[in-house]
Length: 389
Image 1 (tube, rainbow, N blue to C red):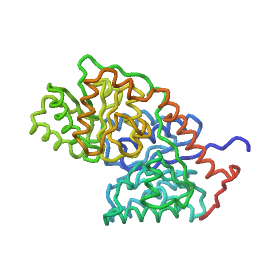
Image 2 (image 1 turned 180 degrees about the vertical axis):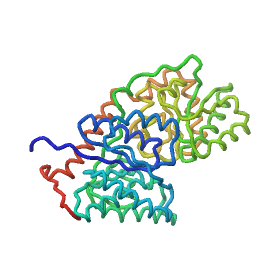
Image 3 (image 1 turned 60 degrees about the horizontal axis):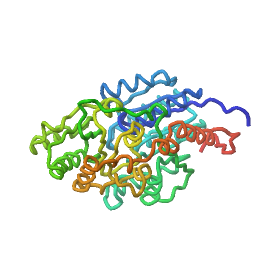
């Protein structure tokens, strides 16, 4: 078959924060090092200094550049102008691959890619949900609309990439059995993430790291922290690290409960800095796909206490004692108390780093994603695409 040609790959997503941004950064670095030309298109109105520094890390790998346009979270009439502007920018980059991440990124990549295909331009259109629209319920009107739109967009999709079995099963249950090519490719972290991070001498008992919005459960963290203190009969300490729309409300919640001096709040920072501040990482999410914070915490040797949601049981083990009932602050407090009061709890409960590395590696993730790109783009790969759809 000969050597496969370098590809021009453009990743489209809305907000450059959280797990999607981490996922794309890893793919960018791995694929650029393999000789491919990579670009990013994302929202210009979200992210702050922390995200800017992360962009600086990968800028040397972005030979197709960083394109930022205003992309609203909700659907609005302004999306029409955004789509036209986005299409022109994408067309000028001449991508072989358009990979959309998250609901809005998936719409942009697939519609722009389909417009290019109509104009007899060969481009592969891929979509990874990363949870997103799959968190919607089929019983609500908004959920029905969003999930039907997912079904409709399959006609403009060359491949769906699922980041865990949970996401694949949820898609089948809520949207329907996929009518296009699919691939299960787990999220992964890099070799440098599998280095134990010791805690500082002034470490707190628990940390929460992530977006400050109810879906991620910061309110449950505050509630469970207070209940853990009562279970153990002594004051404890904690930190909430992150940014988000509900930050002030969580601060007020802590003050009202008399916890303002025992739970501190810090802005988003690099995870290795956050992990140095505690041994115990709490992930109280109400919904997830495959959260990177769990993989990163395990790689750093941290003790994870997490909700039984999304792909988390696929990482910790379906029967792990570290898993708690979603939305249940009492159950969360019970496990938080156990981690502090039961000697050897971490060693008995946490999966070994070697086992995590064998499955959840960014090198494996990037290799499998690239293989899929070539299947869709390279005629010699036996999956030739027509020049127009």
